[in-house]
Amino acid sequence: MATTRKAKEANLASLTEDLKSAKGLVFTEYRGMTVKQLDQVRKKLRAENVKYQVIKVTLLKKALQALGIKIDGLKYTGPLAIAASTIEETAPARILKLLTKDFPQLVLDGGIFNQELVGSDVVIRLASLPSKDQLRGQLVYVLAGPIRGLVTVMSGNTRKLLNVLNAIKDQRSK
Image (cartoon, rainbow, N blue to C red):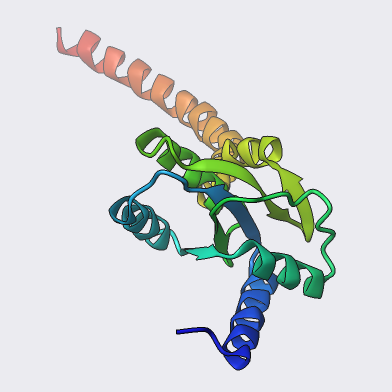
């Protein structure tokens, strides 16, 4: 059954809204993957709040043009899927890069970051960045370092005093 014009317009509006709200977006080619494998990829991405959907290239081009993103570098001919996250910029790239180990047919082709079309090299570099939670943990660790050092120095004098008092006590008990 052919898709009606209203359904096509609704699909375009939905995709445009998804692209507008996405902080990080990665294009993947999935040629050679089975439906079961694609479902596994979707399940793992969904667990990280990343939406993964197969789309038509012409629909993607129209949605990107509606958002004012230059599509000069967009040259896809085969099947294409997008992974989009509204929470974290690097999550789609990071998770998909991990999934390429299990599914070598999955190819990271590029993406959109900061309303700009980027190549696969940028996506791979973004995939190597830690997540926001990891960065926050590293920041807390760095900020707590001087405080931890101060506590260690301050407790050193008390420890030395206790050692001297214990030595005096042991000497008197002999």
